[in-house]
Amino acid sequence: MALDVIKLKIAEYHQYCHANGLAFMVSLQRTNHHMVGNVSAFDSVAQWMKENDVKHVDLVENIGELQNPIEDLYWPIDGHFNETGYKWFIGCVYENVQKKYPKFWKEVTLS
Image (cartoon, rainbow, N blue to C red; front, side):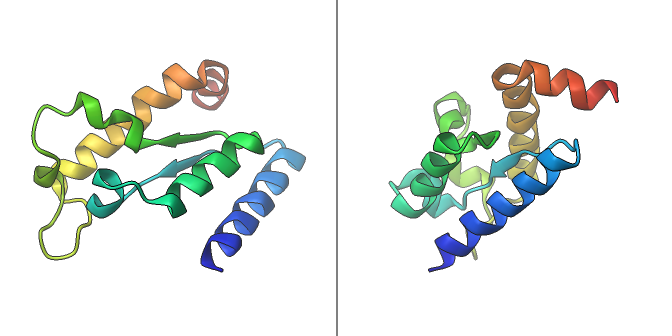
């Protein structure tokens, strides 16, 4: 049920931004559990965004580029990014937006 709410809110924001000429993009920030395992819930949201033409980046696609073990990116107590993880995360978002959506990148950085 939570996934339906997430999809609904993404769709609402996407529609609102499109109607008002605003840029809209979603970045999927997964916990360590979501990055190392096949988590169908996150995967279904990513697939839904592809099917509904919602610009997004999904960091699970960048796992193969890691230089250090994935465990080095997360706090051991709760599985969320630590400082190193957030640096990696924002670097991936920055690069992925430029590569995946070059027109979008130019629009939002030149305005």
